[in-house]
Length: 315
Image (cartoon, rainbow, N blue to C red; front, side, top):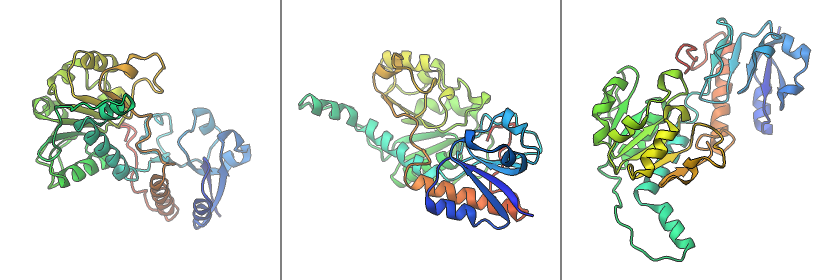
C-alpha cells in the first residue's frame, strides 16, 4: 500500500523526478493549493508545503506529517498533536550567513553612502570606517544561521559571542555563550549584534528602545530572523536620534513594509525584502529539496525526520 504525499508549489523537473522516486510513495503535485482534489486530501498522509489551513486539515483524516520548505515553522500550532511537523532546518544557514556578512561589511565600510555619492557624482572621503578583523560580534540565536554566521566571521578575524536559550555545545570559534537574561551585559561591548530568531512570542519585542540604546552608538544591528523581535517604532526613533551606525534588516514588522512607513527613510536603515534565505534563490532551492527528500525518505522508512519542530517552542 503506497503512502500518498501532496507536494505543493512549482518545482524543477529534477526535483519532480526525485519526489516521484521516493520508495513506496504516490506523489501528487499541486502548484496551487486550490487545485488539490478532495479525494487526494482524503487519502493524504504527508503534506509538503509552507501553507496549510485548519479547514484543509479537517478534510485530511489520514494526515500524519507536515513538511515545510521553510526553516521558520510558526503558524502551525493548530495541527493535531499526533501530526509530526518537520521543517527545512539547516538548509538556509550558509546562504543567509553570506547575506549577513555582506551587509555587515557594507555597513562597516559605509558602501551605501558611496553608492549614493556616485549617483550624485560626489567625491568625498567618509570617515568612521570600521575593520571587520578584531570586531566583536554577538549572534542572538545560535541555530544553523547564527552558528554559520559566526563561523564565517571568526574565519575573517572577528571575536564572536553567542546567545542561546540554554548553554550547550559551545563552538570553538565562540568566545562566550550566554542566555538571553545575561545578554544585556554584553551589548555595550559589541560592534555588531545579529538577530536570527524564530517568530515566537518569547522573542517578541526583545529589542526595544532600552536594549537598542544599550548597544554602542557605533554598533550595527542585523536582523534576518523575524521582524517581531525588534520594536520597529523604537528602532526608527533610535536611528533618528543618531544612535547606531546602521540597521541592516531583511525582516521587518510589519511585512511587507507599507510605502509610507518611516522605516523606509530612517537614517542608516538598509532594507531588503526578506530575501536572504529565499528557497527559490539558486543554491538555496537545491539544499531545501535535499533536506525535504531526506526527511521524506526517513519517514517512509519508519524513522523520524532530521529535525522535528517542537510546537511549544515554535522551532
